[in-house]
Image (cartoon, rainbow, N blue to C red; front, side, top):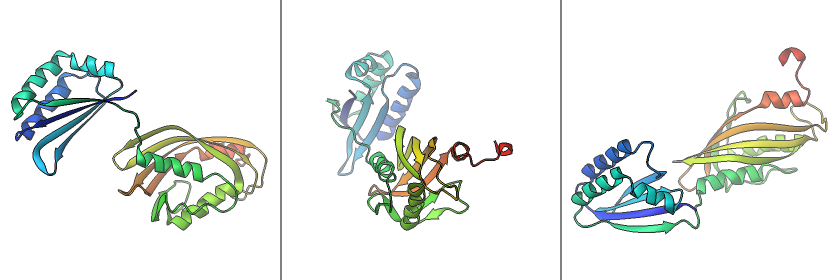
Length: 235
């Protein structure tokens, strides 16, 4: 279970504290067990500083606290504070990456038969799609739905999400496409062939959680080979 430590203090010397944290990061390379740290300043009280530090577990947090470098930096941090920092130990019971959930929602909605669903809860109206297989970028929610319908018309398929990482407004999803070629696809008549394709998609999200832009990389050549659509000289 992920463990989070909440550290609160009051200081007017934030710049010095940031330099102190930079030194701790440098000195604990290869030793620290913290995986993520966020330092925030209270908008209503600039002297109120909150640091949120994430660890794989409580035990790993205790290992981190036991480092000589951590103890030394903590004593220096106390000297920069107007009062003794307070610590709150938190076991994480739910961790929802909301942008990631939106990306997952697309991969759940895309498969199916017939017309694509509205998907206006997933994409903004002027969504911009970058797909190297297309001569021109796909722009607009309606155009994306038509693109999805091309795949729906050609395959009975599903996506398996293998990995997903989020940073800032970007979500990167590594996926596997599995399907059966049941209909016309780009002029290729149905073969009944079972196919598999891997790919990666990066989505950029808006502050309200919808997808504004996407970049695709996937093994389209391998898909065409499985469909028997390539001449031997093209392999």
